[in-house]
Image (spheres, rainbow, N blue to C red):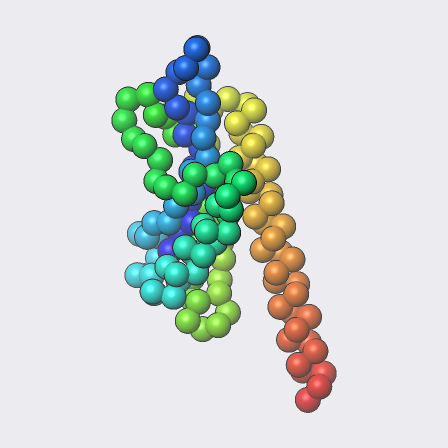
Length: 134
């Protein structure tokens, strides 16, 4: 299951196009079919990103004329049923994406990587404590 954070340029308003970050889940066609637990865990990640004060919109972005995707950050959620969830993250910028929007995308990607790395370190500490108690 994928958690998608997608920046989409809105139709021009007073000559300015705002880029709105949307967050939603989707199936990952490259992996084996997602388990229900993977989907539920990905949805929980979306809910946490979309706290009421958040700039993220909890919905798939609108498609069509005037709505142009600028960038996407994806987090793949796998193997939740094994109690050791696997995460992968990546990003992609689309043609015509302004430099400031690329910086924002990279900040989001870096924040997600930091969170995943600190979570992995905490899990290793817990495992080491359990092993030392035996």
